[in-house]
Image (cartoon, rainbow, N blue to C red; front, top):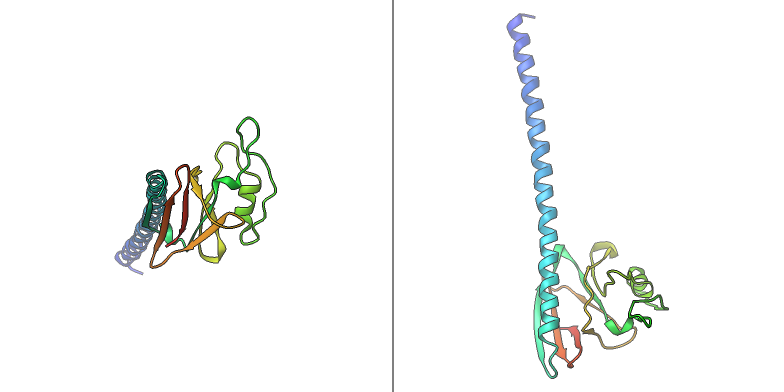
Length: 173
């Protein structure tokens, strides 16, 4: 082989390596941005829901609101705050709570985290359940076992809020 031809092969190999590194870094960068956008969607959802629970607690208030389902969530499951038991010091305590529809929800209520309990859950494909790091103290749901799950319709959760004074009863809209 002639010396000039060897240099072309070397340059070609270097171009392939550089292009591969650029593609890999670009893929990681875009993947990181998508992950951050999901976190932002969850935060906006939590803030909006918390505001609605606070604003619609007045007795006799009846409002319907729609919230974008963060990160393509399929369901929003809510557990009434009254389903959680507290000890004499006001701390959440272990209890018996049966909800066969979702063991993660059942465990979160039966043995709540004393520092950050949660009564809101997002359910994704294949039943993957993620607790939302928020305890909605004014939340109430009708029925037993004090859990309601709302399906997302066209990427939105349609909720009905009925203010009862100290609590807000939330149902599917």
